[in-house]
Structure formats: structure tokens, C-alpha cells
Length: 475
Image 1 (cartoon, rainbow, N blue to C red):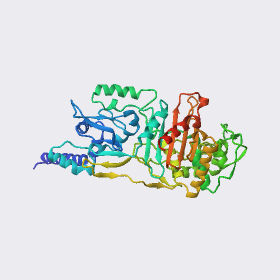
Image 2: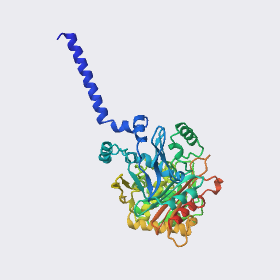
Image 3: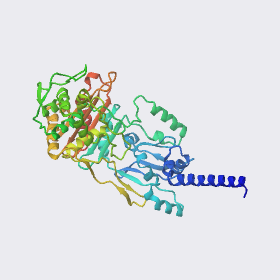
Image 4: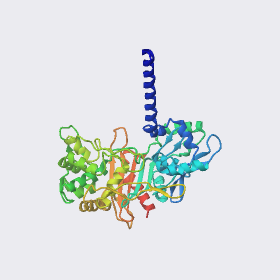
């Protein structure tokens, strides 16, 4: 073989080797990513030609696939769509998936690895691929109560069994109808998408789990827990001046309530939601202690719920002024409603923090359970003794303090109000987090925009009625 032919042969061999390496890389390494890519129409066409599994509350479907005529043999349908949209999300040809439809797409579409045998059998017998069904932990009465109580407000409400971590209700408001995006009239679906995406009240945002906000005074629960863990008691005294000058700053911190004196106990500070007492406490504890306690509750870590979610944040570097502001849930502290619910639930559960979950079982077409979720402890941010001291103080908040609007006859309730400043041009956010001893339920209510005068916005006035409505539905 002469030199030119040898060079051409070597070049062709190298090109063939590169081609084989690329094919192998795509087949072995990139298959899952390519199949999951929303722009992969071949995969989407195959999914829309399959019988997608149902999402169930008890035996009632809240997302189901029905036969259709036209390009695709099936269409996704959402009975009572607006009630459950915060949980189901949407399933759309052009706009992919969200919430459970996204998180459990492989199981619902029948493409999961554990469903491989079923797919082979379906192929051999010429049967349409059948996806798995999801059975959720949700309670219809609590969900409906949360939707009604939130109304047209921008906000969120979540209820959870604090003993098990089961999510009983999860609503982001305003809701929307996912049927508008699931329609197989693609031109109509695009028009609906544009309308929902550009709506001023932003209904496609999931404020319950995928958005974070200043938690305001509800974060004082974390600061109080840090104080107890450092050796303080509810009777420990704190300085509570009418105005607290922030160190090395021209700003000062004031109180929106009467603290009851310029020196108050930790319990009294929580009962009255005394800003200056908690600002002083935060500086005494220091930023490192506050961050360690907040991270023990789940801040700065991915959320463990089985829904797409955003992590809550506690700042990593703080000076004294920033520490004081962070201690009352301001500065750069940002939390999802789910995160503040977990804080409350851990306190109610004697310091044991449970993994929150929405899906109880995944069941195949043969009704066999493919997977199931069992209650699982994921942390212990405070001792049992200190958790019980926190319960004592939170119950005093509801019986004697800012949380009085959350009282329900015949129920022992602990809670904390919160009003959070976000921007001078935007009304404050209203929060209420709390729990009941019987039933064993924790609830968070958050209102981003209530449509009322700025001076009328507070956690007790705006958010607590949502809390009580959800809790009453679970009695």
C-alpha cells in the first residue's frame, strides 16, 4: 500500500472509530437526557400515544387519560382542575409538564426502569403502553377549604400530618385550569399559555413550594429554637427597647406591637412578636448559631418533598446589623411556605422532622405496588425537651398573643404570626404557621397580595383565617 492510500485508510479508520464512540456515548450516557428533553418530539409523540396513568385522591382521579380522536389517541383530563392544579400541574404537548406530572413522568408514562417488563409484555401482545397510577395523601375537604379561603389572593396554604409527613392539602393561589394547556387543539393551547403566562396575578407560579419569600416574624420560631438549644429558657430575659439602633448602620429596628416592657422574657417576646427583643437575641446568639439552627431545619438544602421545589435560604456571611435583621426573618432570609411548615411540624413532633410527601403509592396496570412512601425522619433540629418548651410558647401565642385569631374552640393550637417587608413599593406579606395536637396537623398560610390597605395587613388578620379554615376542614 502506497503512502497516500495508507493515510486515507488511517483517516477513514479514525473517523469510523469517532463515529462508534459518539454512537456509544449517545446510546449509553445521553439516552435519558435526550428522552427527557422537551424538544424531542419523537418522545413526546410516543408519550401522547400511550395511556398515561391516573393521579388519585383515594379512589377519585384528579388527573386521568381519556380516549381522543385526531392526531393522538389520548388526551389528558383534569376533573376539578383548578382545585388540584397546584399538585397535578399540567401535561401539555408544547409546554411539557409540571408538579407531579413532571416529577413522576416516567412512572405515569410507563417508561420507568421498573416498568421494563410490562413494556415488553405490552409490545409482545400488541397492547398500548399503560402508565402507572399515583395514589396521593391529599384530603379533599382540606384542599377545597384552602382553595376557598385563599380565593383570588396571591398566596399559598399547605397542611401536613406532623407525625408522618403526609401532605393533606397543598394550594398555590390563584389556581388555574390545567385542561387549558392539556387540550390537543395546539393553537388554542398556545393562546391559553400566553394568557396564563402573562396574567398579572401569575397563576402558573407555585408559591407553595417553588417560590421563596421573606418569612418575617414566623422565622422567630427558628431564632427561639436556637436560643433554647444554646441553653436559654422561656423565662430568660431579653432587652426590648422601643427602638434598636443597628450596629455600624444608620438604620434602627422598631416594634409593631407593645412588647410589654423594655425587658421581657423569651416567651413574652414570642407572644408579642417583639422585634427589638429578637434583634437583640440574634446578635447575642450570632450569625453562626442562627445559620446552624436554620440549616438543621432544612434551610440552604434541597427540599425533600416529591414535587419540584426551591430551597430556602439563610445568608452565609452576616455582620451584626444583618444578624439582627435575619433573626426576625428579614435581610436575605427567604423561605418557601413548605419550609416554614416543616419548622412548625418539627416543633409539634417533639423535635423530630419528617420528610414531607404527596404520593403514597405508585401502582402498575396489574394493581401491584411498584413503589410506596413510608414516614421517614430526616432530622432532629432540636431536643424533645426544647421542642416541648417551644410548644408551650407557641400555644401561649395563640391563647394570649398575636395569634388569637387562630383559636378554635375545643382544640389545642400553637402558632406564630408573621408580617414580612419585601419592598417599599409592595405591601407586606402575611404569614401564619401553626399546629393542632388533635388532629396531628400543621398548617401554613401565606398571603403575598391580599388586595387590602397596607395598614390592614398582618399575619393574624389576613393569614390566620386561612389557617383556621383548613384546620376546621380536618376536624
